[in-house]
Length: 627
Image (cartoon, rainbow, N blue to C red; front, side, top):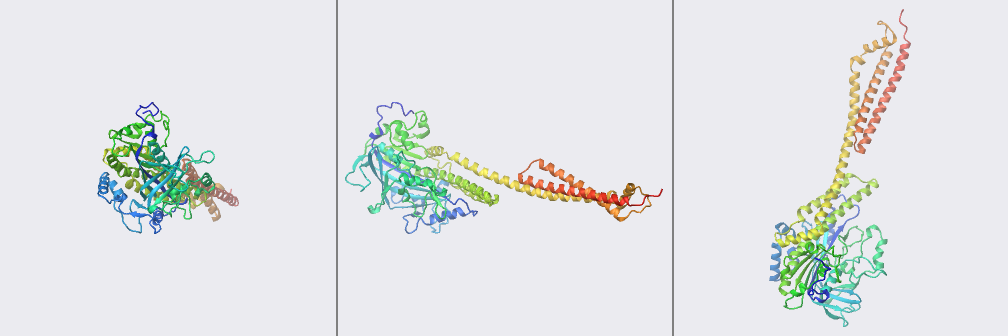
């Protein structure tokens, strides 16, 4: 597919293709960030998570818990019941257990389930303003659904379903809202491209020269609640406010989330910046929220819109796939997009006017607009494929959150070591706590295959490949394995050090045992033997008496000489074991043992020399033998 070729005359610019329905499902992943110095308590993470969700359903909060997750869309009509049934049976049984098991209504929130899900029903409309060139435009979305998932892994996903049908407004919307200066305009594919790109932004990615906002964000936004109650009109953060985060402390540095997104999260949650208790919810991805989208092109009413569908240019398909705003020509170099269709377009039902465009962070369904198509295909997107995207984004956020926890644990260990407070035992406890959580995630919550349906399998594979889930999982395993290798080496060092210490004790005992054995031999230490040696040295006769001081001095010389020789030999043996190599701690202990053995040997040698001098003088005082 070459998006830069001269396309057929039947192809039309995006601005001339009408859109019947634009549905945008935003999934905003957040991760619970604990203090920089983790606790040694293995239950700390679940306790912190329980504390964070405890306030979601407080009296002043608009959130209510959904005990039956199958009711993520209200099951209040026969159509809804049929849709819920079809959604449930679409998945493998183990995925059904994860997604749809009825949960305990226990208000104490033990958090034994894989996740809790909450709903708020007070949001009716979402107004956004944006600029196209010099023209100010306005869109009023219907808010179809607002959910908050909180998972045991410490990940939360805010889900907001927005829909827009066929009309936009042009004019200045900021001062007084929807006033007489606004005029209706037909919603076009170009408008849909721009809205899909802008509305999903959680904060400003950069500022243009002169501190002006980029064209990638909305200019203002507000929520309209039930009975026409409107929230504050939120202007997006100015450059001075946003850049101010750079001068704050390390734990306070976080992107400034737009106020209109902060407004609909639980009031007690702290997003991005640290607070007194040290817990915050931080971004897992960049400022672009992952999303599902349904774009149904064509004129309103029951008309054949397949020609509108077929008139979409290849470059506009690429823009829809990558959630890029409207523009002329290709959104990327033609060579880069050479394999675009094979890599990103799922075209099994193109002949029915349906394409699926997958880039990982965006999953878009493009329809040739018709009432039947919007009822059948869009329902699949709203239910079956919504769950595919939710599972994929949950896995991605959890893997990245686990990786962040590994980094935090290792960082805390290094800080503690530098402060002489670190220990491998504490690091091991923290890593074991993390590994228990990862083990539960891998065996209970991670699904590489979710359905036996061919289309579901193929779309799941596309999502997983573009999100690089297997590669990120492999990286996490490597991080944990490297930490475990370090701990294993540290344990080996401790065992070797203990063995070296035991060897030192054994060496002293062996040296003393050898010396005792040698001195206990009658040949060396017997009194008659000593007397014979003294008579030889002094030239005395067999009848000459040898005094006790001479005998004791001679025996002491032998004793000291034997001890010196044995301990010198032991020192050489220890030196040889040190030269074979070992851990630094073990090497230091062996060196210390060898030093002690050497000092004992030298001391004994000195004692032997002194005793020899004394013995020689005593022998010299003996009377000469008779001539």
